[in-house]
Length: 402
Image (tube, rainbow, N blue to C red):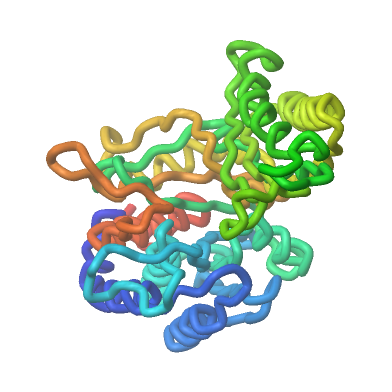
């Protein structure tokens, strides 16, 4: 049955490729997805699907009722936003917007869900309702929250909700997921160190030097995980930004320096330890050198936790498309995903679809300038979504064949 779905979707795969590459040429970042949202809404309406725009800002929800009687409903979610990265692929469909590109495959995620919507609209042989959720601002970690605050699940009630992400390095035709924790909770943190600053050459002895504090802190921050968390704990703590002073004035000791980074964790208690130790180290080291420290800590999204009872449903849907031997269990990842907020509201599963790997084992990972979504998996992803609807809401044709 699901192979039939895949074959039918492949019949309009050229259209999906055009849609994906069009979205890729015109990347839009967090809450600016106006063109993308309009494209999505237009396609859904073209296929006869009820559309609600402006959900959580630039989010779009398409609603399709099956032709059979049924009270159950599911949500299928795709993200639409791009990243602030300058593309270096050199492809004909490369980004036309300087400094922005679809470096995480959200253009493909959106298109795969559109492919499923087109197929299901033509063959609504299920019992119940499907809500196609096109979410903004996943990269900011706030798009899912915005949609939920805009009463997403009150306006579009669902019994379960599902998400999918491409994975470079995972072969084409392979799906993978796992029950329970899947992706890490993700936070941003920052510290501003402040001293007096001064003349770095003429009178360094009259200044309190925030750069010295920064240097000690950059080393100390990497002691938090190995010395404060249990040795078997899974977590990550990294520095991603350092700034201070003026490039044109290397003889001036800056009065302020800033460091920013990210924390990833799977347990709430580990998050609390990381936050506490960042503050203690920053303030203690600053005080030792006559400076002050101010910590900011922004909680972005909790760990992505799959509902164990729903994982067999997602696995069966994927296996129906590619075979049981092509559906595996993926290791824990310290990547973050704001679909986790939706999974806090409703049971569901986040699954990975292979984006491919070169013959020599190489691939361009997400969030890099040379990454591109693999159009060869558009049909597979769309077929998975349709197969999932079959698993959750049943399928009339199957009953007719019985």
